Amino acid sequence: MIRPILAASLALLACQSAQAASVAKTYSYFTIGGTTVEQIETELKRRGPQVKSTGMRHPGATRMEFTSRVGYGERGGRCGVVSADVTVKAHMILPRWNRRKAASSETRLIWDTLSADIKRHEESHVVIAKNHARELEEALKGVPRQRDCAAAQARVKEVTARILAKHDREQDRFDMIEGKNFESRLMRLLQYRIERIESGQLAYP
Image (cartoon, rainbow, N blue to C red; front, top):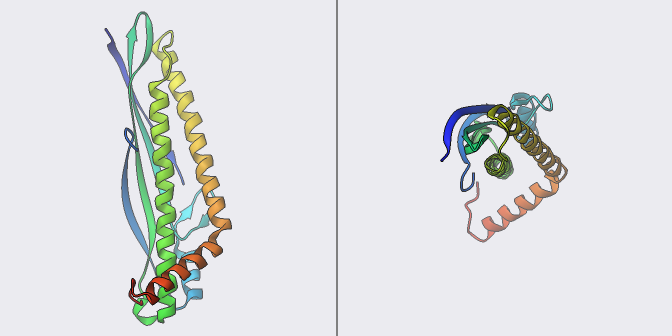
């Protein structure tokens, strides 16, 4: 019989669930002006959210909070994890353009393509976080029993730190790849959108 004797929760922030771990998403928006692509680009650089890891402003950002709730229990003179639940709160900050009516149809087309890609990029950050939350939850459940609950807690902290560091590296790697491929990706997306417009699948902006 397992006798629960200790419960603890760890709240960890990262700046930047599938079956078990869960994720809660919220959104907020910052407004930009401009009637040309160049002006929109300037507005994004001036008004976009500042990311602590880079010190720069970005077209969008996602702030993640990982929360682990871990229950401990004693059996046979040893202490181990009897329950582990990991949740992620993801807050996405996205741009909202307020000069659409004053801009040309070409600029609107480029904005629609760009803003959709910005949202996809931030949603991808959430997927990465969700996958690591699931990995963390499974790893915590698999922590071996220790001589006492203080040792079990220390092991949980080690596992948490390792997986969250892995999460941060994966987020950085994703940003690096996306940055390198930005121009070619945007051109492909524009071409695809134009083809859909020409085929009548999408209305001209």
